[in-house]
Length: 370
Image (cartoon, rainbow, N blue to C red; front, side):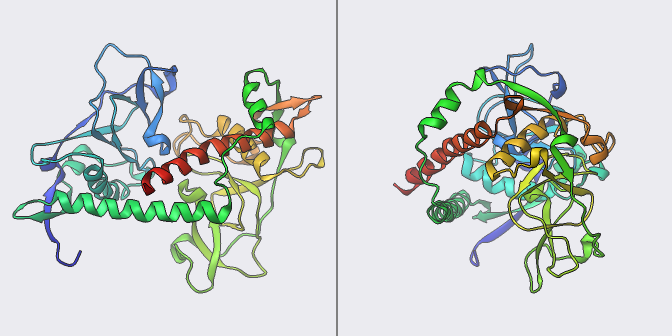
């Protein structure tokens, strides 16, 4: 890194940057096969699902998508044709980028992501001319882009991440991805599961927490000294835990509960399995129905059911969902047995899904290590 020479480049000199023709994400019918639909989401490379071909051509593959709206700060590399939801720009490499693959794309995306992340929801996002005129630093050699360095740099980062992932899998003992008979049975009969509706206020209660005297700008964003306890805000990054406070007797410490934002652009619930406290614009709830103490997998199941009624694109800073006084009156569906939640199915299904996901991770690590 010390011997690398750097050049400053306007993004418009590197890419053709245009706004994409958009589809209303609230009026989309997803299909099992079709063209990728890229929305304002972080998961699955921004791909919300597949849709049928429209009466206009999809965007080209091997291009970059960058969201405009501030709180959806996602920049992704699309390797297949795709349609878009609202407020997404497309970046297509110009001839100056003589070599183009996922490693080059990921290297450049890291700089574009920094630009996009400068904007928050209240600012309304960046303008097209803003991103076109933004300048980024890239490595150069003989006045040309140093593609070899970019590829080697990403290769090193990949190797480090794979090593960390392998160590995590070994430390947690979750390398076993073989499904049990019970897990296979639940997956096989998933379509025939009986479901029932439950009001959230009957299933959960909001936990009272002591108000903190801190403001977010006064706090540390990483563990430093006595600042060791994560605290919850309305952010969806890192499950809303982006600040740390000192851990003392005057703070409400929570664990194994569900957190939900109360003033946000995204109302996504999370299961918090580690200790934390609440700072602002969010709250925590715990299961109270029939006095049952939920297991972590059962909480994870419930989170997904809650997000089906809270984590919706219709809610934003301009159209707020509201706090627990609103959410507690919403209904979710859960698998039932004798008119009560089927806790066994909730636990077993999440266990099966985890193994299916871990299988992909384990196989990915094995491929990278060959």
